[in-house]
Image 1 (cartoon, protein in one colour):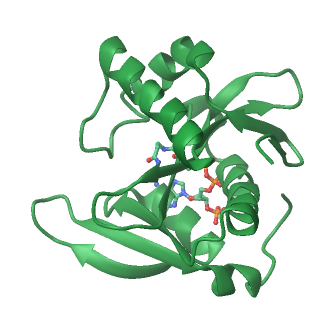
Image 2 (image 1 turned 30 degrees about the vertical axis):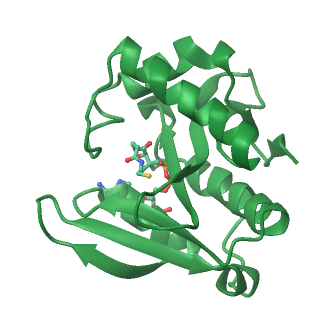
Length: 177
Ligand SMILES: CC(C)(COP(=O)(O)OP(=O)(O)OC[C@H]1O[C@@H](n2cnc3c(N)ncnc32)[C@H](O)[C@@H]1OP(=O)(O)O)[C@@H](O)C(=O)NCCC(=O)NCCS
């Protein structure tokens, strides 16, 4: 199911038509504070978007754009990319700052993981979070991810979180999606 729905959001695969949206997201200093590359230029944003679109074609799994059901605002993205060091999908999420702090990310990730485990059936899903990114670490905890590994060098420390299909299936429900 490529289009997903939660109580407050609709999510659908990123397409080439989302270029202006992702330029706004990947070029935002607050959104990219805890990323290796930091703010992306327009050209870098275009390349990243092309990779996301290609991943959908190749793997049937990728990043989705998220929109508020009420009013239709683009709020950010949620979905999967590939880590060089792991075979299973890696979760990524980012919202524009006006939408932070109201549980939207947790809501988006829940439905995204439900879809991924049901359709793609990976054994586990990873998520990589810089240690100083307190909000993202909290999102991981709320969703039941476990801290599997810390890569301390080079700084900042990178936390590798994981959740298995079985852990996701048997987790305690923690809220609406
Ligand atoms: C990380 C991010 C996605 C969180 O989005 P969000 O919609 O605010 O997330 P939620 O509201 O679902 O949950 C955030 C949780 O972190 C907590 N939190 C937020 N900022 C915090 C801080 N500075 N210190 C401690 N906790 C914090 C919130 O209170 C909330 O927990 P709670 O529900 O127990 O109160 C958002 O900040 C973002 O887009 N950041 C930039 C991109 C990014 O860093 N992505 C993560 C890497 S994959």
